[in-house]
Image (cartoon, rainbow, N blue to C red; front, side, top):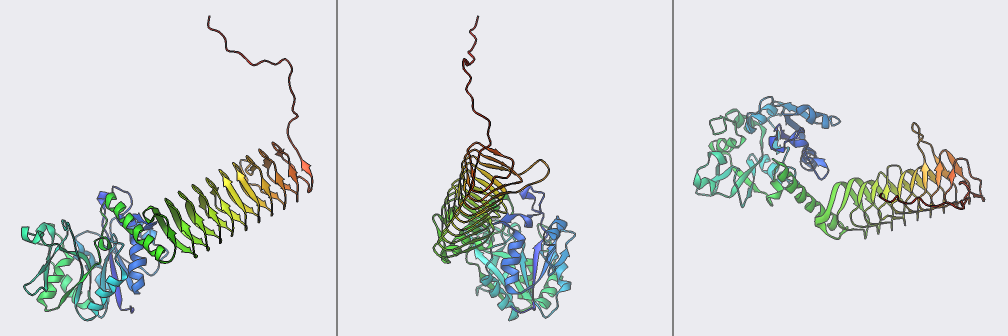
Amino acid sequence: MSKDLHAVILAAGQGTRMKSARPKVLQEIAGHSLLAHVLDQQARPLGAQVHVVYGHGGEQVRAAFADDESLNWVEQAQQLGTGHAVAQALPGIPDEAVVLILYGDVPMVSPDSLRALCDAAREGELAILTVEMADPAGYGRILRDARGAIAGIVEHKDADASQRAIREVNTGLLAAPAAALRRWVGALGNDNAQGEYYLTDCVSHAVADGVEVRAIHARSEAEVAGVNDRIQLAALERACQASIAQAVMRDGLQLIDPARFDLRGRLVAGRDCCIDVNCVLEGEVILGDDVRIGPNCLLRNVRVGDGTRIEANSVLDGAEVGPGCTVGPFARLRPGTRLAEGARIGNFVETKQARVGPGSKINHLSYVGDAELGAGVNVGAGTITCNYDGVNKHRTTIEDGAFIGSDTALVAPVNIGRNATIGAGSVITRDAPADTLTVARGKQRSVDGWKRPSKKKDN
């Protein structure tokens, strides 16, 4: 689309049924606000200059997009209807432009439908997006004349019984030449049940001007679904996730059950990857080839190398996992974790700001934070790096080939030398030399004649 396209996004609604302190357009589906979906999936792919009409909670809305200097913000101080909202934006749009009207709470309209609207408007027509609904209650009905041409739109509250039986409804999305739209909006009145200036009344003005009104039919109800309450938000989330699942499967990703997969960000997956049920991916997730992710996992801002296995019930957040690694089950990789090729993180292991070298293993019940592990290190069950002194964090370094016995506490800052062995149950407070066994634990003794306490008998 050329730069003569101006998109006006109506985002001033209060959304009282959400019962939320956040404006409706900042409610989220698939990890992004409704308004972000409209911007990124509708207006920007068309190359439109964007005007956002804001009202309730406007400062929150503007703050959420403070880094986007391309947006023209237009305040609607009083919410007097959709026609009034568009009227606030029209002064900033030249007559020779085409205007596309979008809604900040209708996030799933396809670019193809919008292109069809804009193409019709470029031909001088008023183009509106319609859809057939099984239950059209609440929507404006499309009125057609005897020839089948669109003659007008009647809002649900103003419709009579025969009009309410019509199933073709107006979605509110439209495109028109700017000069004509300016004229039609200027002629709007508010003599209706709501006392508002309806944008839909532009249809009857266009008909009166002899301008053809063309209906572009949406593919489904889901494409044009809006959001008014939490129930509709949840339904739209599922519809959006179903669409995402189909898209990633078309790109070659195997989903064991598409209905139990959530992507709340951006996913790039190599060949022959498979994701099991109930997995959530957030932020930017990049998978190499032949990656397998078990059930009930959360991956957030993660990069995973070829051939790696993420076992069930694992959480990876801000981690980079190399090729041929195994993680989990029940593992937690916190931000700053970096696993080199062939590293293994086992069950109930937590890492944070830890670099784990090639082939190193932390297999059971351990916490390794602020640490540097070389190649071929073995960390026994129950090992912890004591990295925090209550004020500052300190690092632990474990060099290549070291063996850390079970139930060991490494009190940072501390260095474990190359091929060193730490005896099980040790509390290491000083550097352990290379190629040496280091043991730091209390001397074992047995006390002769000691007896266990016995429970006193009741008198």
